Length: 379
Image (cartoon, rainbow, N blue to C red; front, side, top):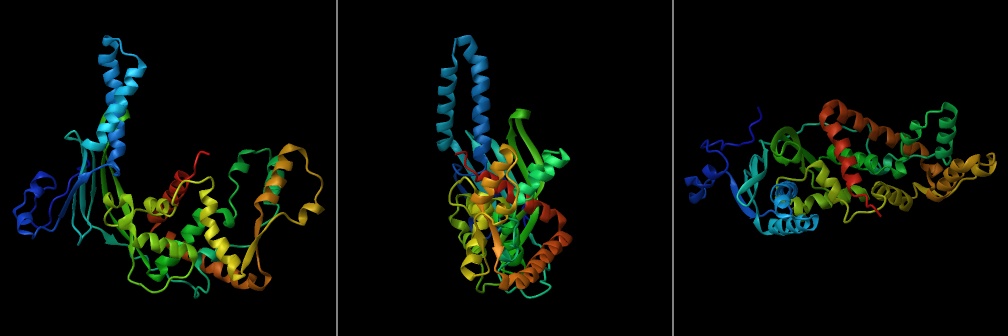
């Protein structure tokens, strides 16, 4: 059974009241730093919201029915409880700066609604080595000349096979695949030693409505920190990543993850706000920089459209309209061979990453996609 707790490596006291009252704390020699503050922007607020909803539901059912309440009264109660959260939710964190070990608890009205424990962190030794020197940023290197008729071709293939599900699974071109461009950029930064990955055991206790109470689970935490290489960084997206990482202490989630951002929080923090196409916005870092360097450019429409037969049906008309509007990326002929070689280098780095730590690589894909999806607005 998972035990969501942490003990001091020196005195053996358990995090919580025991560690808070440790004599070494008064003497200033305790390994763990203590911080306490309102939990308005912490992960525990999710548990508080769930608790508020559950409390309102139960109160309405048990008390409201006998008192003749209506739904309006239940909504009022929920608002009252929600407002109370901003004054009554309290977060307490014990952090060992030397090892990264952390114990964090969020209480509401003195009742625990969330707990997070991170064990001692260890830096991943990924050993990524480019097969050849990178002469362009890794984020740009994954760009390639794209088909101007990819959507129409996929529609034709789908029509011929009759498997319409395959259309939704069509891979994105690199110029619109923000997850691919970000992953390539991060792999390049890891290979340069500009960014490092810290791994530790992650234990979580959260309030779950499905279980009507707290539930424990175990996972692995991957936290990103600045690497030993503090030299200049090339690449617009790479610079943006490093800049946001260096200013992590300004992010509202820093109080939840003081050691460094998890993968999800780093990607989520690259955006200043939600938007309609976060995937394409992220990829645009590479596309715009490639254009400014003369490596390639986005091309609207295609001469190939003139040579094709007239569109068959509404779907094909829409597909061609989208192709003309969205455009496609084309490499400058003078850079085709260089970019082909550079793309091979970056894809090899991604293969090395997969071989060195498959679990981290899988987590990187999942958390990147999840963060990008979370930034997509509903407008």
